[in-house]
Image (cartoon, rainbow, N blue to C red; front, side, top):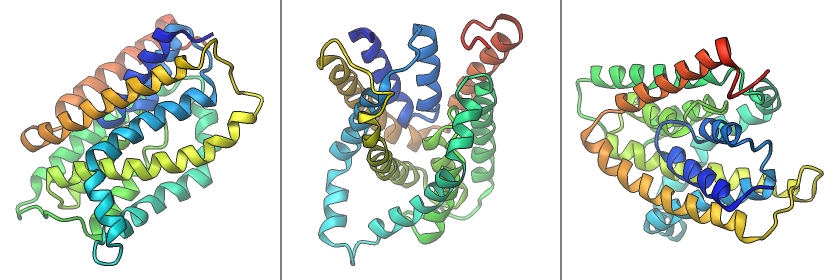
Length: 268
């Protein structure tokens, strides 16, 4: 049975890694393996994502309210919908195959290294642009960020890192790229929650010793997600994403070494 502390740790990993460009799905997979948690069940997964969704809604509620109040005048609702299309198509076509390939964790190191390459290459390409970056999201930016989100389906490939880099390379300024990326995550999380609810009645559902255990995980994800968004919005104005690339490289190297010599994290 999952304990309070395990639920809280997973909530912290979800909240921080969902919005930092280091992959929440990859960190959750590692966290579960290190704690010996074979499965958390759909309820905890749903509540962890609900926690991060709550963080997005708390911070960006004026933006979402403006979009809902003025759906014609404010184009962001349409742009968010457009940006979500590539990931939806990719998930419908390849989600089962990706889950089967990466469920064991054996190849997770490849995905973390892919995130590293993405962050370094993206920052380099964005730095080559000589003209002033755009301050508002357009169809071009939404499509670029949406396509990059589709590539972030495998665990270990950062969704926020992919979409932010897509915006930067597409010519969007750093702050707006991060902001739109986090707002895109709300749409992605809502979609994931809708598809996950049916699993609550399935054979993989897990019973908890007390209902407060998954709720504790949700609250941890909410608080740390809020902190992560605020920190990233401030950080990205002043710093590049390369330090996160070094971090994901380190995780990838450690996982590769473990796979080659020890098999402690993800035994075959």
